[in-house]
Length: 545
Ligand code: TEU
Image 1 (cartoon, rainbow, N blue to C red):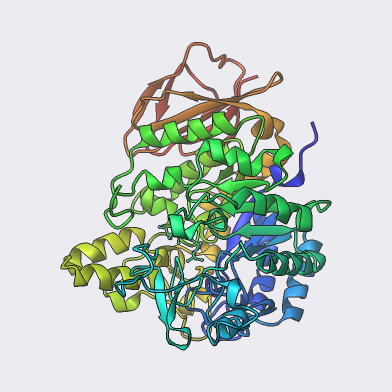
Image 2: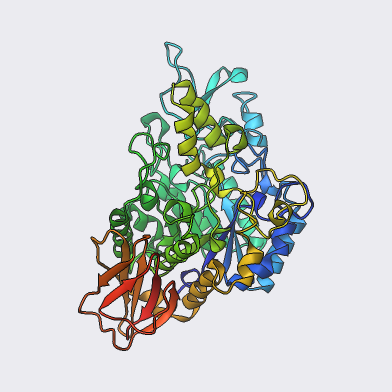
């Protein structure tokens, strides 16, 4: 069975402002990324997902775009972008860019015109509503970044809609001129040589604001079908939608091939297991492995055969996996490897977030002033004003602030972790002298080489791509184990995601006598026994037939 190239690929996400600074201004840039392509080629990744590098006032670190056709000077120029595409291609690496079209920046010329006059030709590129008769806001919809989702515009004496910051006005996709402008921009970038898009909050573009249907709205799939016809059809592109609202059922609507919409989506059910039902990630709950396994098993089973999973622990919005799901203390290396093993053994396209491959951890800045993320700072101010304890808020921020993922990449033990010759835009994690790429490359037992092995296995083992997933030991509170089966081979994947030493009986149905270990971390083992002795964070992938 031939697969699209992205089914056998591993994607590496780069958050450009934190990856590598080539000119000492404290911000990562495109030249910095180019200087690290050989490192990424050594890791073995196939695709780079580049978080936005477009012109932006950087209110939300580039997820507020003021010119979709030009590169922000902090990151470089269009010529630099062309060079990155070319240099990556030389190394067999494709580039997908971040499509942020649920909203633009309020400094985009479209919005600057629209806010000046109701007669602007761009007026209906955005969503405007008058105050209610009693003078109150058009509705009680709240922004993800705190406060109302409506901001007053004096020049036209009405309100514009924004689900994120006040500087990120939602685009009105019901105005045909909006998708038309987006599709022609997408085609310009595809013609420039990128291989596809990660689509920011794409589940929000079909919204019905007046009836408060914001995600998975009535016109969403019509737009995605039209987008596919207008831009992706006939191109061998990878598209992945960021869809916080998705369920296995709706995920098939996005990614079943016959639907001709997207290649896959990011689902967040496994992430939201630790979110409080009312307060979300700001009242975090401890993660429960049994529940986590059930979620993964459900997605593996539901999307098998007719859609496709993405596989990830973290990204630029999420805390570091080893801190959230593993142990960023004595078992940091072992737990980072175990988490990678149980994720990469599943069916889907794995996404590695910058620094995950060397076991980078969360950070715990002392003061809210040390945090840069708009979501974190707005949350702190809003909840403090509501009387919440600053200490409790800082504890939640240490666990789940997006800045946990955004501290500069740790390249070596030199100044600023080798990230910049200038003052980094965000403080470097103080553990960089011990946790950095240079140290990892010198240590054959490092997290880096474990990721390299997993990525290499994906290129050579078809069962990893096609094998049917069956969860084992579903109720075991510390062990994540499953098999992947085809007619030709059975893979057994096991991870002890705890600090406990365990004796774990394997199902008698498994034939272990000819087991061959393909990837192994922790206790080395030459054979498998029906009762596994697992040290803390032992993990392996074995071929049983
Ligand atoms: O994120 C969407 C989003 O909803 C998350 O930011 C979420 O609010 C939070 O991080 C998880 O609790 C996307 C981008 O990934 C994010 O960086 C942007 O800030 C946001 O959209 C607006 O473009």
